[in-house]
Length: 262
Image 1 (tube, rainbow, N blue to C red):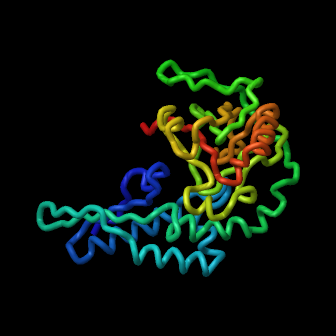
Image 2 (image 1 turned 180 degrees about the vertical axis):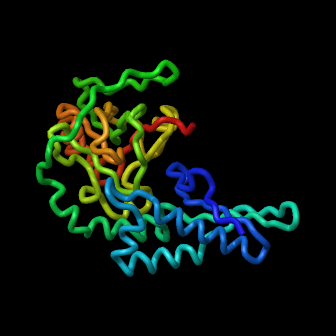
């Protein structure tokens, strides 16, 4: 019996977690579900936690995850040589019955996030990277443009951003600009706290971005996990002013543009 997950089991674009198992017909499904359970537990939630962190601390999270696994959907089944069956199963990352629904409420209530508005030590900020020759330029919103804007789109290409269920944005002085305490929990569960488009086209065509997003450049990641991103103080102020006008942050209308998959 084979216990292996498919490459990149978490797809933040399609919003699913997927895993594969192989073995005799009677055990292939069990192998796939075991792999799916392992994949779920490794999903980053914050810069310092994974789904496993919350499952270990909360019986409620553990129970919800178990129910998700019981209702996992089989999306592929093949029979190879010598009768070895390979089965692929998946569960939703977002939605009413999803990984996000099982975990994000705990993140909001987590005492580790109660002081998110307090100043923190100044993070390491890097100069904005030069666009790579193969990378389509993304025109940043000019400072004189006052909106109104429909969303926030942050160009994080070249920074190795790590996708997570509950990332944060900071200004370059170390103050939290955006995170789980600043969103509507229902919106976060339905579509995620941020979107992770993998191309300029995907970002600009996304419903989350809307017709006129505020486009800024990330300075760099905060910390080695590369889950949280840092904006310049000037851009952070623009985000605050634009959000006061349009209220897109609470609606989770934030996108982090990442490098395309290799």
